[in-house]
Image (cartoon, rainbow, N blue to C red):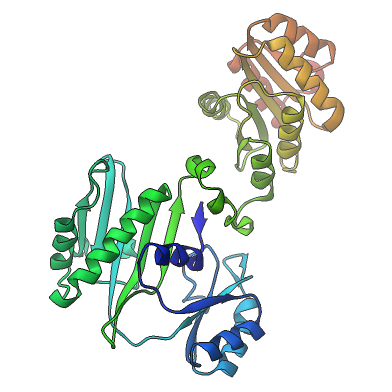
Length: 385
């Protein structure tokens, strides 16, 4: 889950990282009042979870409260890369002498967190890595020990930071590490970290990404989630504890288990079809959960057939079949359903579904073949029983 700039910077401030004075506004009148409080000269920033806000005109300098009101009206009426701007951040304008970059993320190859810094800030770190990789300083952090002072000093030296700023930089680096570990983040970054004309160091912009799997430990972060950037079906799936990702194919998939779901999609593609989604209903899914999953799958108008692949380990297959039939009586799908059941009481479960005139299969290959044939219109329902 990604956080907005203003949310990230509010968290940074709680951990001692200096940020510019500023407030969030929902309309142009609020923006004008905030600009008056901050002395008139402010920066108006669109709060959307996409890059390239500046190039799209979503970050503008206002030299007076009246100009702030005018620019706020303009920015709040924008769509940036398809996302509506519903909030703006009004920050004090500062005179910048130097821009830096500092961030922490997971290094999967090293299997530990890495702090990265660069003497060049204000641009995409990926662009620096491509153009001048030698300008990126990396320090690997042992998660059992944490960030050490000497590591922060090494970074300060490597990016040619003047000595008078070392103490402040080390405090910022330590604060960033605590933000990273406390919030189960996968990325925290300040870009740019600036030195101002009056010799302050400020986190002018901030970004945080949090591990979705750890959100149960952070209800305060869950409340910050921006649903504008998520597909409505994915939002609905989360309400029922379903793992759902929309894809581009025509074969809807409902599977219990992430690994089995991945295998199901692979087998569909092997036989010439395209999965319409990844959907893991988990173990022991009842009729209500199955019905919710079907509604979500069928909300995609491109779905021509639904493949249900269930391994009855913890839950018996006859109970799964009852759950499917109960869900179908509620959802009443208008597309064919191919069901593969395997596990405890699989034969009883398949018989119940066959008696209800559903397409059944004993193996995943057989189920995938039938689903692909239906999706391509090569065989009708009556030839697949």
